[in-house]
Length: 265
Image (tube, rainbow, N blue to C red):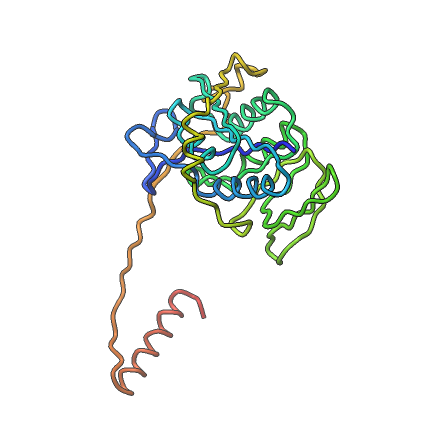
């Protein structure tokens, strides 16, 4: 069984800045980490590896320094890592990113299962995983909270939905996106870190992939971020100390008046 886990390097900050000219994220000068939600995808893949002996490959798209997230994935237990990196990929939106990652997966070779995190904490769109499945034309199951292996070529998955849970049978090759309930991510081990230091990370560029240049990067992105800002919370109000029966009654009257003004009652 071969499993590929696309992971992402995201800024280690909640105060994300955007380039007003290109509408892309400013990453220079900002420390980057593995997208926290991708750690659950890695754990799901590694748990399957523990059960079946599956081969797990971590895949990421980004600048050369994104190799750090692959080192961490290998230290956690992945067999190898592949970096998709080229200036032509820069500024890609979710459409162009999923297109490029799908092409990279084709180049790597057919995978039985692709596991991604629910979403990335920087863009928060949850579109790249489903986009990869669409480009590869394979079955997709999102918000998976549990995986059960069945006979060869089939998985039973439990999806977290608004009404509770939904059970599906998924035929492989397939892509699933997982939620936090799937498992608690393991920590990198000393042996894993030593392996990461010795593992040669393969890099795929635009010339290595069967892609149309017009579909890559910023030029190939049909969407653009127009504006991003940090919400400002302003709280204006009055503080009432209800210390006796009279002040409690006054506080209740003022609360009702406030709710009526807001048309909440």
